[in-house]
Image (cartoon, rainbow, N blue to C red):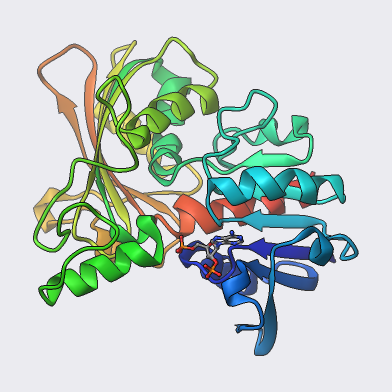
Length: 328
Ligand code: A2P
């Protein structure tokens, strides 16, 4: 049994951590909930018990003998407190982007690169939600056919922008002005997730590109991305265009996907079967459909990949990393 802490417990992903730990019956001895000073003293339920939320501070961490700390309170909190939790003996699994590209920190999707958890020194990073769901099918393609180039186009839900993102959609539908996004997200698509960088890309797009190379251990991959926020409450959808190195039969690829853990092939245009955000919400698997040849190039493939961004894209992936650590 383990002592587990959730940092950012009152947030969107934080609450999902609680739900998933309970659902999966994670072997917990004591569970500690941390958030900002604002939430100190508030209560959250876990297994029909109320747990009091504490302020994230050294004083509140130091005597708790925490084994696993699941972080989702933003990059600044992670940068400040992850090393402190680690110094008191916890393994931190961090959902922010703070440590993802740090060469001393593994970036892990359990179905894809489980071997990388072995070299952590107290902190393991959970990849970006859009990256995680893309990795599951891309790993299969890379291993079996080689990958030359990837073109990502994402259709991302507002839940990925936290409580404020959800509020902006709900309020926008009532005609109220946005607080989180620069324009209304109700009835709109915003080609703008995270901040703009000097090269014209958004940080979200660069995260997808760089994290893909790190997780798949392949710096030669050619990748480009356009990340778009859409007025969907939950679950990210992605169009992934891939150029493979070797020729392929579509049936073989579908069979490989069918046999991949964590991936559900949901693809039959005759019965209008293709994954959608609503059908993937609340489920653990990554769903894949519209699997078809890209006729414009040799060895081209088009995929439509949908997953619950708060579950597989965040909280579930982090809990699966902790489960893997226990197993190892
Ligand atoms: P709080 O509710 O006290 O503000 P979301 O992204 O869904 O909005 O969630 C953000 C999470 O990060 C919340 O749990 C929030 O707590 C927490 N958080 C924000 N700022 C801090 C901080 N300075 N220290 C600890 N937790 C923080």
